[in-house]
Length: 398
Image 1 (cartoon, helix red, strand yellow):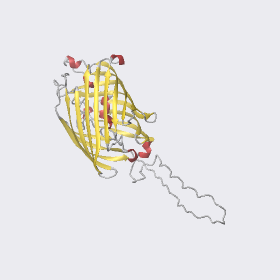
Image 2 (spheres, one colour):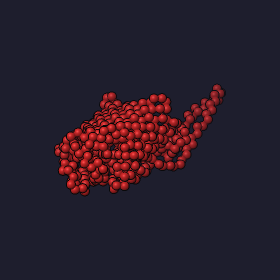
Image 3 (cartoon, rainbow, N blue to C red):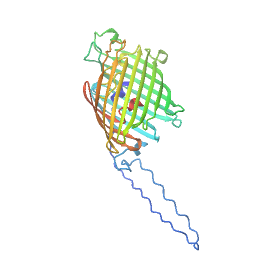
Image 4 (cartoon, rainbow, N blue to C red):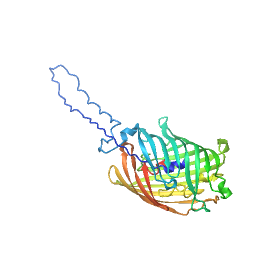
């Protein structure tokens, strides 16, 4: 479910105590006298025992760290604090499993449930992993829930509330790595069944046509990705570029024929040993007989989700990170976005929408390169707090 993923910011709060002490015996070697009978060769020093998955303190700096636990397939219950104004805040819980057979091949399993102040609730499962010795990168997401949001057509600038009851949503992709392993490509599928409710009489017919009815969608598409990031969780250098096109058609089980197009670019560059720059540019478009609530919207920290919709949407953001120590970092970010209504006149052109803010991160799993922290952003509707697990852009980079 596209909308749900934008509302869930993630943060790990867990603490456990364990200790492991590994000692290396001192080795003494002596020459064997010629008259003495030969003795057995000195035994090799015992190999250092691998760290226990239950050791929650890093053997390098002694700080709280979940690398061993997560890399061994462990999970931590993660409280979800939803700060998104569009759904009037909320709470949830997630079980996040991470395992890493290779540094850049991190398998993620997430089971989550949530409920918000405006009545939205849901449950979902996501798995992202690798097969065939890393040549295939696959993702599967299954969800069920009810999402209540506002839409802001020109004839109702104060917003109109509607609810989508998702019987199911299933999204999946399978990307094969090309000979240049930075590139991968493959098919996409997107199937949903929902009922939409809007209890307001007298709305324009073209607008009301999208609501108070059942809808089934079925889309098949193709995606292409370039990825040179040094780490998929919290990258510090490299680039990630992604493009996809999905086609909802009757032959795939869709009640309506429409298309969605997405192109995204993210870059990370060190400016000095302790300072790095990040940049994102996202373009989203939709065409055909699409329901209005499937339209893309400006995606920036500090901007209410689904507030500024259109047929063509552009979102850009710059982030500057100062690494204050091995574990801690501070960051500042700012961005601008715009939405174009196109020929769907129940939207309105947004003009330039600006937002920005400050944040901090703690490296919660050094061996996996995973950061977590908080962002305080300010946009047209005021201040918003985001709890981050991994990079703030990671959902769209993946």
